[in-house]
Every structure is written in structure tokens, then in C-alpha cells.
Image (tube, rainbow, N blue to C red):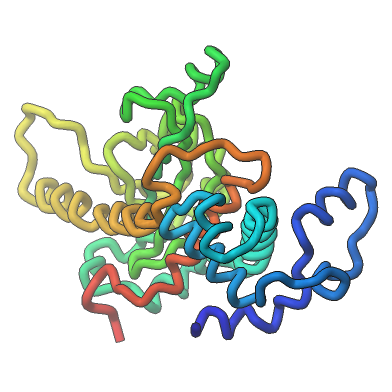
Length: 287
């Protein structure tokens, strides 16, 4: 309910997705929220609960329609409207932290990597196999051996999600996704990023890159071994965040492409909502 208290004052500004789409097609502006003109079948808090059930439990629209005693088309409208509203409301808040903000909350575990600004990894979501052979080849992920959509997710060392890219076809490489996401423009020379060994991005950004090396037979120095072990261990934090996001059952199964709601917005909302969960990723923080 704490999150509901935060967004409740903005509810009156909500515009139905269908009305917004119609206005966009007619090049008009929607000035009056739909709630003042149409009969409400559910209270706003109940609509929000329906949206969360759809996202976290992954129930089908027909099932939700039966449970909430409303028509399936109404369920689709509620999901599309709340997806758009939350993407706008949460997206209006800058989640990218400044260098000083990251330093202020830098966990003790990162004391050997004090210049870390963001930890990056890719999240892959299973998607419906397209009927087009061309689209099949574009979405096929050789790593997952299935059709997927792929996004770049970044977290600050103390845990919150600070960067979310759009979803791309699963065939795109980690390096190409990094370049297309636009995060390189946010990084400066005094920052550093921590990534998995598959991110060969040293030549793509002007900041320092902490990346575990590929397996080699060459003997390494003791300090290099320690840095590699620390990079692997600390890099797991972003995998835990992605796992938390995927606990939303909507992303745990095969995602069906729907013309009703925007899957990019849904994924971004799920990522930003994870910042409002209380579970800490690291136990100690600098006080």
C-alpha cells in the first residue's frame, strides 16, 4: 500500500490507452481524463491490483475477467492503461544516479572498486516464435537456443536499477546492444562499469571496464586472480536483480506478442517496480 499512496495523487490524470491512441491517430490532444466521462467498473486501487496480478502471477486475460467479474475487453483496456500510466509516472523520475550519489551509498564490498558507476548484464525473455522466417532468424538466440527478446539492465553497486534499455531481437550481441542502448553517452572517464566476460566493450566506451577474462592457460599474478574473483562475485548482484524481475510470472513463460499493450513498457515498469522492493542485495553499506 505504500507504493499506492505515492501514485494515488496522480490517478486523476490517467488517460485510457484506447482514447490516447484514437486521439493520436486523429492528431488531437486528450484534455479530459476518461474517469470523469465514463462509468467505472472497478475502483482505481482494484484496477491497480488487477494489473499487478497480471504482471506478477501471469494470469491470462480471460482468467482475470472471470475473477474480477468484468469483460475480457475491459481487462485488456485496464492493463494497457495502467502499463502506459506507470511507464510515464515512473519514467518521469530519473533513475540514473550521479557519481556522488553512487559514492554516498557504496557498499563496503565494493571498496576495491570505488569508481564503479553501474553493473551491467542482459536480460533475455522468451517470446512467441514469429511466423516469418526472417523474424525467426532475428529473434533466435544462439545462447538460449530459442526465440527471445533482449534488454540491457544496469544497477548501482548498492542495488537499485539505474538503467533499462529497450527490448531488442535476441540475435543481437551484447556489444551491439551496449552500443545501441545509449548508456555509453552517460559514462564519463572517471567512472567504471562492471560486466560479464561476454561484453567486449572496451573500445565502445571511454570509462574503465571491469570484466572477467576468458579462460587462459597463462599463469596470472596473485593480484589479478583476486580482482577476477571479486569481479565475478560482485557481478552476480545484477543477475540477482534480473532474477527478481523475472519472478514476475509474465516474463517467466513465453511472451505472446499483443497489439493491446506495449511489452517494452511492461518490462520497464517491472524493472522500476523492483526498486520499491525492500530486499537488499548486499548486507553492508557505508554509513
